[in-house]
Image (cartoon, rainbow, N blue to C red; front, side, top):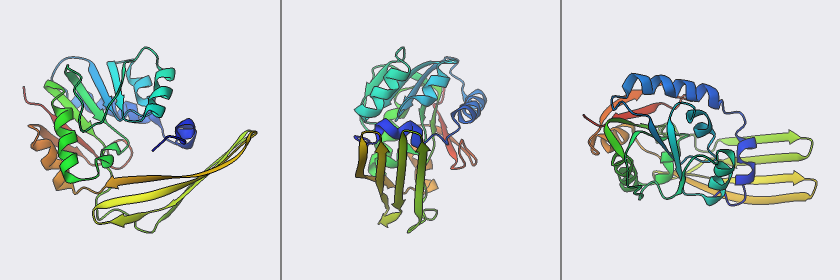
Length: 234
């Protein structure tokens, strides 16, 4: 994933209000954090736009599985340490006050077993009193099978149409992004497949509780998809 689309990631998601999301995240951190420190790790950090804002308040690091997205993140914030690793299996050898996993990236764990592995791995990087903040993907009941979605970019030297329909197979949601991209150099077409697990709220709760965390759920969250906050007991 993102091998070809990474270059266009930020323009495609230009509708995201990172400022507002970060402001709300700071409020929640203030409400729940008890560790007293300011070290933050963003898991599945993408192109680093949240970290670009969060580094004004915290000592931040990022982690992602996509080398293409990390290349953009490093160019955006060269002073931030970034790690190329899988959210289900990483060990940075240190702990953080805050670990975040935003923009529904937890869905890429795909299976319940991998969800528990990922949450355990992130929880293992928390200091006592620290918090794990996870923005979930859709639940099985809220996933809209057969929905048609499209994003369009119309800039002077960049035209993008990204179209997909939503599908399901068991507990796995999937969609093929069909990209049509026009630049002065020509027009390119490619397909990018995404597969994300559909986890019940109870399964999310249990994944955090099973990792030894005290769990709070914020119904609104950052973007309307809710937010799970797990705190490691002091």
